[in-house]
Image 1 (cartoon, rainbow, N blue to C red):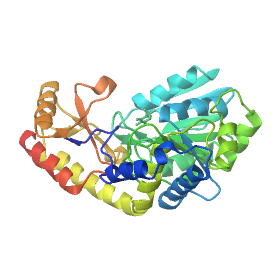
Image 2: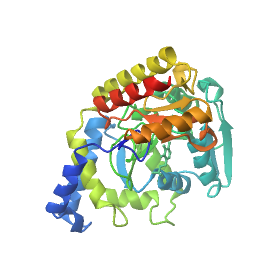
Image 3: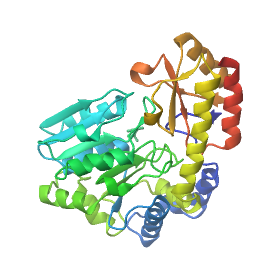
Amino acid sequence: MISFYPGPSRVYPKVSRYMQDAYKEGVLSINHRSNAFMEISKKAINGIRVKLNVPKSYTVYFLTSATECWEVIAESFVQKESIHIYNGAFGEKWCTYTEKLVPNVGRKPFDREVQLNADQLKFNTGELICITQNETSNGTQVSTDIIKVVKKNNPNHLIAIDATSSMAGIALDFSVADIWFASVQKCFGLPAGLAVMICSPRALERAQSINNRKHYNSMLFLDDMIKRAQTPCTPNVFNIYLLMRVMAEVKEIDSIHKMITGRFKKWETFFDTKSYKLNLLIKNPSVRSHTVLAIESTPLHIEKIKTQAAKKGLLLGDGYGELKSTTFRIANFPALRKNEIDKLMDFLYDFI
Ligand SMILES: *Cc1c(COP(=O)(O)O)cnc(C)c1O
């Protein structure tokens, strides 16, 4: 089965060998305070820094999921009010999780067809602005150029970005925000159970002034431990090892970005000009995600395509939330091979 699910998604084919290596090299049983682990952890972090162009002054942390990152951010980086700008299910979920932990939450939903107007986003209250860079539920994205203006217009706020389904797939300018995170079962092409969070010095200063140390995964504990390339609890050593191997192998992000954008353009042409029964859910090209495509049709047609696809060994992503019956989703993640994409395109020709 070739998985086009936008998470958990197709892992890099070489992960199979890396898994065997991990077993043979004894990685599965090493102590998480040992030098052996610290070496792996340092190499994984360095791989992320080099391949994804992380600014030198930013710190990379390990967590277990993007959902955990939502909670850590709510606990460690904000005291009174967090502002959430979102147009889909994941951004809304982030807001709902934060509401349970932070006294005030500013909900700023926007239409998924609309490009955010950063000049209208100036906030007099709140300490943190949360944006989902790539909304996996509906296939939209917010450009880093727009995020940059949001930051400029709100110099006293921290900017936190959920890049779960875009980090390691498209080039992101990390310097335009303070906190970035992603779990690895999407564009990193790895199994679930690990997340990466990237923080600016300013974010860390904020955490220090708030000084929340109530949780095992409070930012300040994470920061104390990562100085020794460790984590507060026993981490997913296996996945950190796989991450180290994948980051050593992948091309640098600008080259992956080119490949992903090129593949996206092909999909875009396919649905915009060749198909009339299947359409991209998002009509405005300037807000379309390059890593997750949501395809719209009648519930009957969608059901038929998903069933037929499964028979051919092609797993399509279900629509998410309220879009479940009227859309399916296609991951455009780097671990997918060109011939796999060609196969799906050939298959879809019978349904357009
Ligand atoms: C998948 C996803 C999440 C949730 O990731 P978990 O690792 O399951 O916590 C959060 N945000 C976005 C944008 C996602 O795509």
